[in-house]
Length: 109
Image (tube, rainbow, N blue to C red; front, side):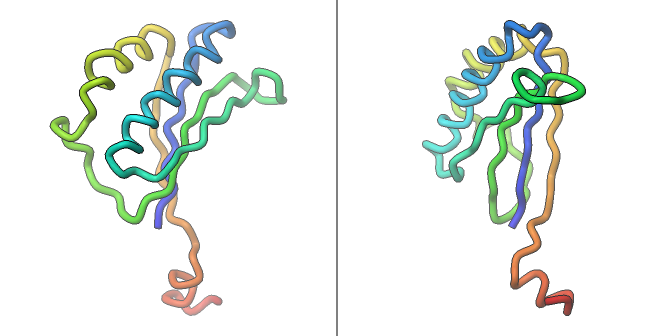
């Protein structure tokens, strides 16, 4: 099991909630195709933080490359362009979740 985080840094403070809305729409499109629900969180806007970030995070069973043909059309035709105009950077982080099964495999439970 893996947790994936897509972290966006808005260009300006006023863009923060717009970025959150677009990320939510992107995640909704993937959820329609079977991805687990994502949570959108904002850091550094109304909470302490070194910089403002908007993060979408979700869990999935395995990590596989996302083939262009599998990207929902609305993301390609609308949301990607809108997001690109509002963010200065975008990165994806991958974490392996320490499930009971995984801990047992490593003999540490």
